[in-house]
Length: 431
Image (cartoon, rainbow, N blue to C red; front, top):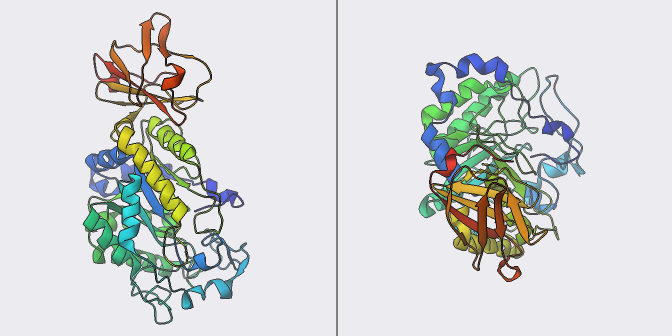
């Protein structure tokens, strides 16, 4: 994950040219997800990101708050500007005992939010592993750990039991490993591949891998890593931060642009940082719904981050916000789940999603009594308000005019449902 002061991370360079030949070969199909896997993932539309670790004891950002000078000669991402001294940060796990951690409760909260999948951070750039890896002692089950729990084991079991898809976040940069970024970096690559193999071998079904910070394929032997991963779990979906295009783009802390030719997912924090921050400012329900709807309207997914407290519980006010999101989705989720973006491209106050012969117009803010949109190339057979009340829709040469009386407008989102005389997905994007 990045913070504003680390602007270089925004340049997630994807070396498509260097790998285009491999992507064009049928023998290298392991470099891309199966179409049905991508389709199923897009239909889910909403996920929960969980970012946690010993750093929660400090209330500072994970990874980036670790202060250490750069090491090694290779040009690979490194950290070092944080306020917590390296020797302090690297020993937090020796006193971290989150005795109220309950993976089943985390999964319940995710389900209450309406999330269809969870991305769990198993290792950040700081190198600390929240699973029982055999390749380093810097782990939650390590001999010096104050709390010997295989966290991903409990998270995976809880997800599998609840039917929640599980994607594993694994940072390939590792500022703690002695070989990372040095002239022994090839040994680090072997370590990296070994850890991914452990994760995909020992914890049952994993539905995806979420890498971070990018780099070039040669930094991580990415082609071989992709092939090994999908050789173990063929149904994996993998993001674009390993120096390869992967299966989807990952705009961070911002809503992705309207894009129907390639899948994408916005990863956004509920508060202001990825790991727990005391008295953090969290987004309102209106802000959360705006973000979710605009992501779906751009044909993308949203994964919203929570950051459990040092004791392992999700902060109560975050739990309440997630449940509010879920309550909204129980009423209006048909306009989000399983939809595609468009046909209208997102505007300042309006977004649209579509499914079958139906178009949903989301009016997120009202600036007047009437909304006029470019006409649809299909006939509107019926119009109704999914959010309740009355609506009048006129379709003529001047465009599509929508009128909703003040008493039927919703502060969060007024959803106009249009039933057409043909498939909405046949309509090209409209501005």
